[in-house]
Amino acid sequence: MEKEAFDQRDITILIVDDEPRIRDLVRMNLEMEHYSVIEASNGVEALDQLRENLPDLVMLDVMMPEMDGFETLRAIREVSTVPVVMLTVRQSEQDRIHGLDLGADDYLAKPFSPRELLSRIHALLRRSFMAPPSRKTEIIVDPDLKIDFSRHEVIVRGQKVVLRPTEYRLLYHLVSNAGHLLTHETLLSKVWGREYRDEAHYLRLYITYLRQKIEKDPAHPKYILTERGIGYRFKELDE
Image (cartoon, rainbow, N blue to C red; front, side, top):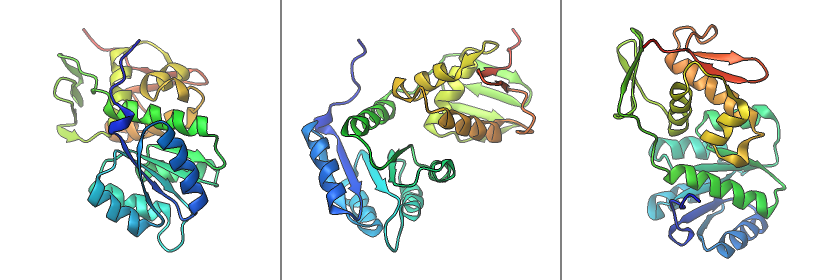
């Protein structure tokens, strides 16, 4: 069995919610798993806690007065790459995509079970502390795209592009299996974890992000190809 990359006793989680009842419920479940917990009741307090205590993960409610969760997330992303889980009663895909577009790492709809809450946190922390994948070879896909996994660099038409950690892991698994079809379930398990095998919208969204960054025409991709209803395949590489 793979050894965990972190110890819960060393992890601090910030809960941001204007409802004391929700904060108490989440704190109780986290502390039972030996996480350290700090709290904030609004966005301004959350930013203060972020600066002062440097939490390892933030659980952020969307529906808060004055400074809502989306505004708070935007401010967090200006200063930190800390993993963020959005908590909300909203369940539309548009809301989920908006949060992920702003830099959220996961999305959990209320009401949620303690088991699902802990599973999502555990999976996100595992990804956060996981050593990034690496390969020793430089891959020249074509004159427009060069990938150096040993240096974590992606060069598109002569310019270095910055990938989020999740985008990088997704590209790594696609390129490592170039020419071969990877199913939705396989990619979700490898990139996000087994708990996310049914979260196809995450994969669709991050495929879109990657295409926007590496494809010359994202609407007509030549690198990341869709096998409709099955999965994705990176173009076959020349020897």
